[in-house]
Image (cartoon, rainbow, N blue to C red; front, side):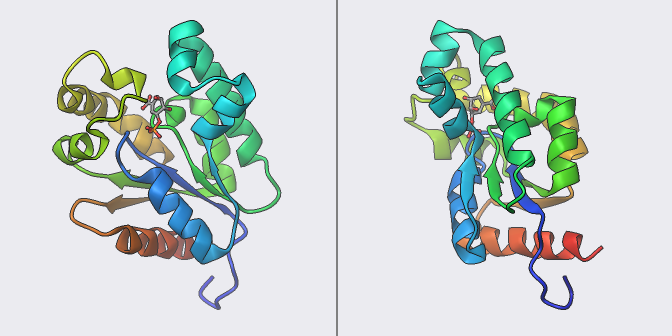
Length: 180
Ligand code: S3P
């Protein structure tokens, strides 16, 4: 894309809860003039339940199956999208493969303490209910790092950066990777 030709690949944002995938994704979609999709929203629309209610009523395994299907559907879209993935979406190897082969995957990072501040007071995330969010986020950062690493074409550190700055860095990654 060095010649300025728009990328035809999806821009895919991954990372832990609180990384800013939805906010940054919406900004990137505006800047690229592309549709924005959030896999959590797709799952909720399919199940006619909130993410929290799916965990409570159907269990996490059922949520992961719905998430796998949502990822497969969006990755297969012929129109280039901006896709914000739920934090656990790339734990599934087939989802990672579909996202990487159809998109440029950008891992939004921040220390657990920063993520925890961003999600403070948000009761919508079932994985953060039972312990101090910072403790859970530290654990997830360790256990999930290999999956994010395997999924990502690029990493953007979001700590101390504005939404505009992070969006610009994500778009730079899309352009750089699309020109390879
Ligand atoms: C989850 C992250 C959430 C949502 C669900 C599980 C996870 O999405 O998919 O609560 O496993 O990290 P966000 O990362 O958008 O909060």
